[in-house]
Length: 380
Image 1: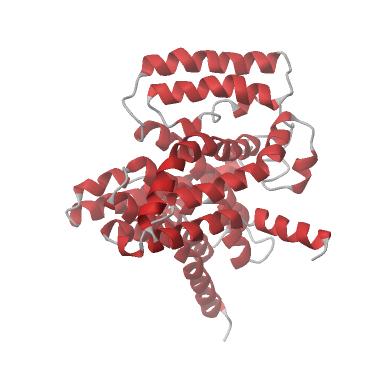
Image 2: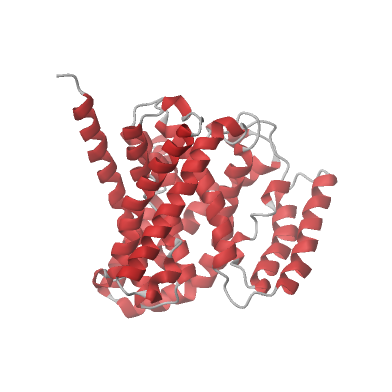
């Protein structure tokens, strides 16, 4: 294979998050062949991957959220963003409510703590699914992208508020977060362009604030990233042009793009290893909440927004909104992370993680519903 072909294959692997899939597949095979050795390695890697490595995954997600608020970004205009953001709220409230209802009706109060797991939308895989289902230029694609960005932003808030890693200490949190924000602000005022200064100094203090404050430290760079010097306009998520821009925020993304892919491989390897016998009530609760609750919530809240006088981007039709909502039911990465935050190692964690993995079934389901819609609308 020539050098250009190897580079093309590597770019394809990175652009489609295949390292995460590889890590997930390896974890599933390993856990089902020799569960004890997998558990030992997974336990050894857990802190480094989930509490340290994932800091940079959430930092890149925050970068996209910040840029989407710039001129030209999806969140720059409240009028344009209103319906997808409302839909994102529905896409979180409905699956959370359905999960909680099932916990009550099935008499499994011990699962109630996992109510936020089906709130998740995996922005990369849902966006990729939408591009494969809808033709280029279809309004459902940017709608889903904006919805996923809003979902991520709200999900970070849920993670911080409802899933502390230990006893919450507001004193420790404030004592360390205040100087973290102060350092970030000072670096910005001094026009420091080196992103390592923000990451190491302000980010280090922020990580300590969250860790000792009892909040998940993977969110450490979320309050720091907005201080990074950035471009004046948003060029669009996953834009190739951004990788060549000189501002600190885009140089941060360019530097961390490949390492974060490796981190995601390790995340899949560390967290996705469950035995197939782990499928249980929690699995079906997560899966049904994602593939049923999420699209219904997105459709209902979108229609409510339109009823209130707002307009869906591109005049998106109800059937396409339903298909898009099903595609948004791929929870995967974020759902796995929420599961590990919600439950300690054991049966409940394994069941809910399996539900997060099974949410990939939302993709073929969305394809089938899209095809059905085409048949119904085809002229006789």
